[in-house]
Image (tube, rainbow, N blue to C red):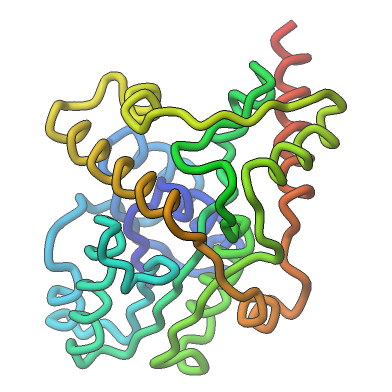
Length: 263
């Protein structure tokens, strides 16, 4: 039995179907009943509420192997979410559990493509001139599925998961312009505007926390590049990493297909 937490998040909703196709029995943790129903519909066997102290609970329950999805450069403590991930990594290292830690770089997110395809603008909350490494979510979840299928081979490993290339916003805009066949502008926006667009209906406490994270990201990424090396991911996958252009073409094809379906 494999427990997947945040099972309807960016990684989880891609990972769970892969594990089910491989024949694994899956137990999932989610944050809403709506997510639970969607996961039950594709074959998840048990759905649990998200709880605290999951590492301690795993140790007490005799879990054989703990796979933690962290973040690239978790030691960067001026980023709120990195500091949280770093502390969890430390707790896991001290837990006595067998573990594997995955450290993905910035995701190639479909959400960021919405303004590109609908408005012709790619937006970031940080400097348009800073470089970032990115990674495709399917590449990340392919690795997670591989680790969970044969955890002993990956015991005590920490893997940086980074796609090929380093991109400024201008580089990203150039790739997107090629994909959609028209000029895509790039724009730096205020973190509060970005957060309100994503979390318009969120509870005040949730919104304030996310805004603090967005502001920290904007400050860090405007002052420093955020890059990594793709060699580990290529080794784990046994193939090349997914290029950003391929990701963008897939998302644009899906957007166009949906637009036709709605006509």
